[in-house]
Image (cartoon, rainbow over all chains, first blue to last red; front, top):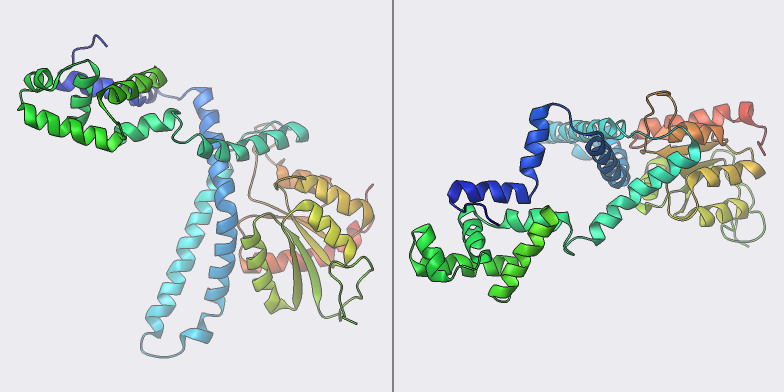
Amino acid sequence: MTRKMDRTGHQDVSKEMIGVGRRTRELEAGSPSPERMRTASELGSAIVHQLNGPLTALQLYVGEIRQHSGQFIGTTGTADTLQQIVENAFQETERVCAVVRLIADTFEAPLHEETAVALGRDVISWWSRSRSTEGSGGPERTISIHGLLTPREREVLGHVSQGCSNKQGALRMQIGPRTFEGHRARVMRKLGARNGADLVRMVLCENAVAS
Amino acid sequence: MPELHLHGSEQAPRLAKNTTRILVIDDDACVGTAIQSILSRHQCETVLASRAHAGIYTFHASEFDVAMVDLFMPGMDGLDTISRIRSVSAVPIIAMSGFRLRNSLDPDQDFLGMALLRGATISLRKPFSPPQLVAAIDRSLGLAPSTGEPTQ
């Protein structure tokens, strides 16, 4: 951590921590890497698989409601509005289904049945794998921790992780020591850190994951 | 004596001709329930199984006009389930899956296509609408005689 920790400099560091900098460069360069395309396709398929059950049930129910809506909506003053709501619900359901079909179509797999099925199963289990590692220090945690903090709090965290006391940190940021302390306390509360050492350990873990 | 033994060892007597008996094998019980409630309005009696093995057991224990099989389930694969059913019966099988795969070399080939190769009568891509579901049942019943030969 030899980077200059002024306001703009720190912004760069936190971006790198969540990998945004790398992705931005990739996007600027034109096409994403094949690895990223594959990961995106597999992630998409895993999500599609999770959505397929509920969406199938939803499409069946909404379709049936729409077909027989005349029976329960009746002919009262609000009938037209209710009919329109049912129709809109149907259209929106169709829209979601179309999006899911589109994502499902991007899944690339080898032709050989055994390999394709194995890959399909692997992609499906990706979902449960990624759920179970949540909160155990995986990349998702990196994003979630930094997403929790305001730019100001991230700045404070940067100074604390460099070993600054409240006084030193406050001086660097040109704010009162009490204000600095307040930010620090909020960061600790947000991240669930028990003490200063705990906070520094969290930042070190973050950096290890990000690099 | 009850009319029907769903889980009995002996063959259950066939219901009246105007009722279509459908076995749905899908690990998502909510999908099965939705299919059941739609088909109940179309003179269909639907039996649900949430695992392949339970489905095959039920299939043997009773008599069905159509079997609907989801392709990706925990435990036994839907493709193997289709093979198992086809090896003993000429019943129309509807393969269901929302999971596709795309191969640049052969865009027509996907998991549903594999299911047809294993002996499924027709395929139904998830999610599907009530008319699509009913049409699939009708079509599978109509197509059944032409694919009547059990493939070993």
